[in-house]
Image (tube, chains in turn red, green):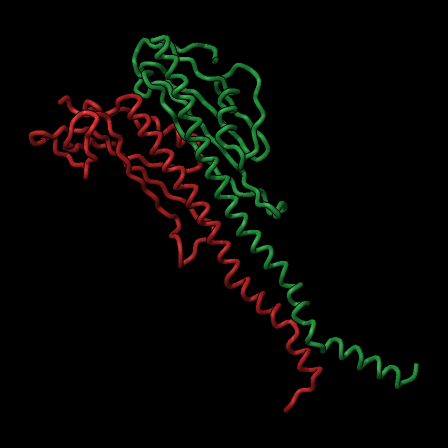
Length: 166
Length: 184
């Protein structure tokens, strides 16, 4: 059956509006919701990195771990947790070492850290303290395709504390 | 009005409603609210990243600045720590967070710790610890930004973004170091 021109016109009017409404509900709104989740995760990541910087600064400024004995980093993390919305978990720092070639003012960049304190001839033993921090964040719009809820984050960093005398 | 005139008027209105030429414009007018709101939301996300980056940077660097200021006093006097005043800390924060964040008003008084609130921003500075203790003296600094998207002023209370750090004063774990009562 052939529709009249007027009926055809009425039938088409509003198609774009309906399609946009569908697109908004099925695509645009979920996209914005995921953006909100991203904001929460980025905030948690920034807090974790800031806490790691604070720990490394503490290690530098107090010489924590330089002699093999660790300082009281727990107190620094507790202070940050008391002021923050996130709860950061601190794993006690472990002493790490690397054998570096070169001489004062011209040391090479260490390739990897290890627990070995023995170096060959011509190498200098460098001391590090390595920290690992973890936290989790509850995302406001959890879904099956992006972040798990809660979403776990961790960061590892090492503070160079000094080196053996050459 | 005759029956014939009513019939002509009806057909005239029917032609207008059935016209397809302006249909796209009308539908665009309806949909444009949503489209522009979505574009504005994307722009807001970029603005959020800009402001949040400034907040993180300002909190980290202000914390370090304050700790180094106190450390410098240890070096110069060899035995005393002087914590910078809250007013100077806020001034430093303003310099580091400018321009994306609104400058905070300068607090009065000679206190090193305190909270300064300015619009959607809050800066809390707290000096704690004791000289000679395991942690020594450190400053806990928290910056909070209640981020309000542009163009969505009625959209709830905004997103609360917060960054905290703790900056240790070098040399404060040594026993015998004294802490000046007043800031400078």
